[in-house]
Length: 249
Image (tube, rainbow, N blue to C red; front, side, top):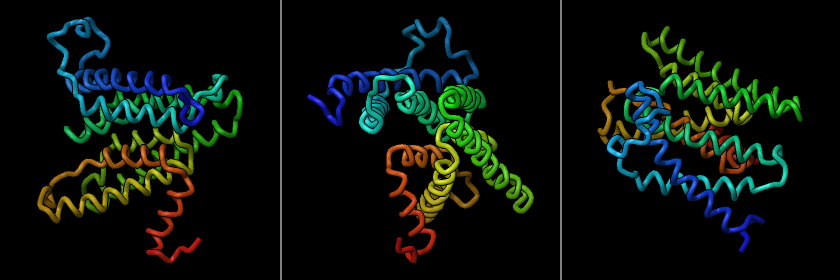
């Protein structure tokens, strides 16, 4: 049986892979929070492993199934680069969301790993098409630059950071994966989600006006939306939202 020209056994394999990676994400999160080595002998110690997070396993399985559905499986390595790229990125995004939601930080080594993998992939893309590599680098500059300006302006105007530098680094790293236009759309969606959800949290008194609301989860959710929703649809929706329905294209 084939779905979107991919055999159902491939979907099953990716679902299992996603579930396995969910356990690794749990392990990595704990080790990064405790500032310990991720790859160590402790990995073999059953007493130091956390209980399986079944919700996370289902989410990761669904995300990996979605990757195969949207990007397919092709014969050549280059044709599969998008699938490989986002298969590597998704666990790091989920990890960033979970840690930032819990502790309001995004570990430097997590952002650095995203950067390193992103730069390596940029080089691989550039071997075949320099324009793609340039677009990825422009995405990095734009993503990090936009949020750096907002952070610095927030410090000057309000006397405190509008968002953490972890968010700046995260956006810079994501620019390498989504390119210039993709990172701009991610930024717009993240701000829109942040505004809506923050208003709801404040209105329902779940959060107080002086409480910090981490922005990393909004960035991650926005990135996943851009990854799985057709770009043209997102641009149309954003134009309608930001023009208050006046856009008729």
